[in-house]
Image 1 (cartoon, helix red, strand yellow):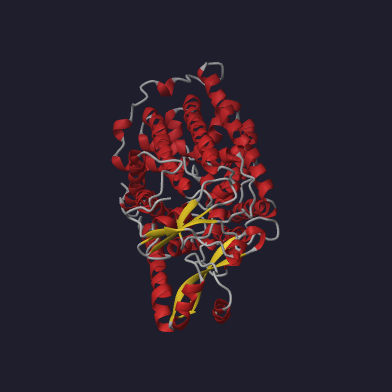
Image 2 (tube, rainbow, N blue to C red):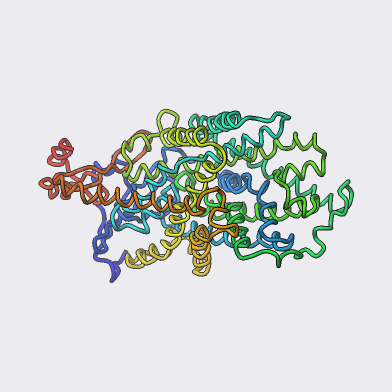
Length: 581
C-alpha cells in the first residue's frame, strides 16, 4: 500500500515468535503523528481491522466460538427490541400524543431514526469487523487521545451501573398476572431474582445453548405479535364481540391539539425505548463469520419485521379497546387487549406470552452486555483482566456474567419499590445517552483518521444525513431530561427534584474523569513510573491487554523491546524488566 501524504510512514510489522504465539496476525504498522496503528485479522473471515494500538488486541480465534449465524443475528436483534415496550408503551404513547392518528404516526418515525442508528453501527463495525463489544470498541477507537480516557470512563460507568433489575422485575410482575395471587413486594423481588439467575446460568453453561434458546424465544415473540396482528384484523372485520371496532379510527387525529411540546417529546423518548436493542448483534461481531455481510443482510430485515408488527399490533389495540379506556388504564395494555377479546380467564393464560417475551429480552440483553463488559476487560483498564476475559471452564464469558448477576441481584433486592427504584432506572439512562452521542459523532472522527492513514473505503458507509439525524436524536435525549415536567420540578417520575438522576449520572462521569487523571498522571508522577500496556495470552485463544507500571529508568528498554500494542519483540532484557513489575 502506498504511503499517504498525511501519514508519517507505514511499514510491515515484524512477525516475531512472541507476537505469533500471542495470537497476532499483523499486516501493517502505521504511524500518524503520535498515534500508532496496527492491522490485524480475526478468525471470522473479515477484512483486516485497522486500529490504534492502545485498543484491545484482535483475537485471531474467538474463544467464544463462531456460533452466531444469520438466524441468530436476526433473533438477537428481535429479542432485544421486542421486550416489554410493545405490551405497555402504547397507552403512554396515546396519553402523550392525544390522538390515535398521531400515536400511530410515531412508529414509522421510530423506524426511520432506528434505521439511521443501525447505519451508524454498520459503518463502525465495518472498520473493526473482528472486535466484539460494540460501543466499547467504537468509543475506544474514535477517541484515542487522551490515551485510555474514554475506555477508563466507559469502563467505570459500565461497572458502576452494570445491572438489569428493571427487566427482571417486569418479568416477575407478568408471572403473577398469570395467577390469581397478589404478591408482596419481596415475593416479586424473589421471583425476579430467580428469573435473572436462570438467565445467567443458561449463558454461563453454554454459549451455543444460550443462543439456541434465544432463537426459540424469538420465534415465540414473533408468533405472539403475528397472533395479535391477525386477531386485530379479525376484530376490524366485525366478526368478534367487540362493538364498533373502527370507532377509534374515525376522526383519528382528534385530541392532537390538546397535547404540548413536553408530551410530544416524551412520546419520542417512548418510541426510542421501544426500538432499543437494535444494535445487540454488534456486540458479537467477532463470533459471526463474514460479519458485515451477515449482519447487513439480517439486522435490517429484523428491524423492518419488528416495525411492521409494532404498527399492526397498535392497530389491533385501538380496534379492541376504546381510546378513553386505554388512556385511563393502569393495566398493561396487552392484558387489557386479551381481556377484551378472549375474556378474563383466557387473558390470564395468554399473559404467559409477554412472560416469555420478557425472558427472551433478558437473555439476549445479557448475551450482548456480557460481551461488551468482556471487551472492556480486554482493554486492560479494569483490574484483574483474567477475571473479565477468561472463558474457562465452559467457553463462556463467566466473569462478566457473574459480575452482572451480583450487581443486578443487589439492585433487585436492595432498593424499595417506588422512588428509589425509578431513580436507579433513570440513573442508567443519561450516561448511556452521553456515550451514544459521542460514539455517533465518532463516525466523523474515524473517517478523518482513516483518510489521514490512506486507507480505502470500508464495506459500508452511512449517508451523512443519516448519521446527522441520529446524532440530533441523541442530542435530543441529552437535552430532554433537563426540561421540567408540566407538573413542576417535583412532578417527575419520583417525588424529589426531577433532574436528580441526571445530575447524579453526570457526577459519576466526573468521578470517572478524576479517577483517570489520578491514575494516569498524578500517581505515576509521584511514584516515578509510567503506564504501559502488555499483552496477555489466556485460554482458548483469549487475548487481553494489561496495563502495568514501568519505572522511569526502565522505560527506554521497555519501549525498545515491545511493539506499540505491548507485545514482546525481543527476549532477554525485557524478561528482567517484566520480573520487576
